[in-house]
Length: 294
Image 1: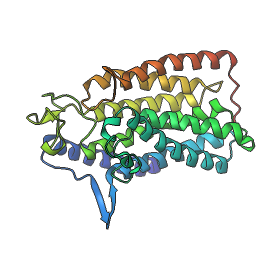
Image 2: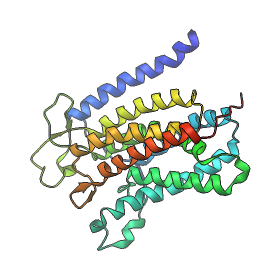
Image 3: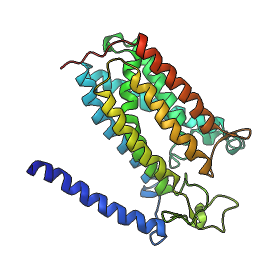
Image 4: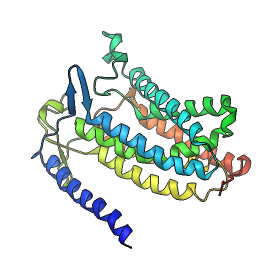
């Protein structure tokens, strides 16, 4: 009991402090600075720190799940390393592909990841991670892991990393939605307001909506992950659950990427929902059985 109190006490205290801090930021009484530290030409931004924190915590949880299924930690580290690289590349390429007008006059800016990690898209990161898992499980036979086993491990902890990473949007004053007067409205300084919305002060904190939903998805997937009978079920469920929320949150955002008049995130969400159902059906009837090491 004492051990539980020692664990919960700092969590509760931290949550209370975070609540009042966020409340003050939303009210406009505290203005955030996106740069945590400057070392010469090097900038360390809160966004990068939060993304890295999400990745590390996701790895720690995923490590326990992987070992439980008899996978080697060395192989997991290799796959995670490859996944991070492919994820960053995928996130950047996705953003560039659907906003080329921002890079047309200076193509070299496509490679400038150090500029606050701006211009990354989560769908590109997801697909990049899936490609990395496919290549690793196909060519690293010693790992003895199937593709869907790898994707189950990946997506079971991904929502937690997404939930944490979304707070990088908070520190950057980005990924917010339309103007609103709702009680949970968020103040955005004039310098960060989207063109045409300079006269508005308060906006939907869409990053918060997605972060809260991702926490719920994470809890659901972890529960299913420990009880699933076949590989692939968690992969399909993630695609469905995450995409449903993203589809309905996206119309609120002011910074969406487009294909013509269609928001790419909504179109991708629809595709992922159908793919998710297809994977779940395949896993139900043809998926390999889960074998736990203990």
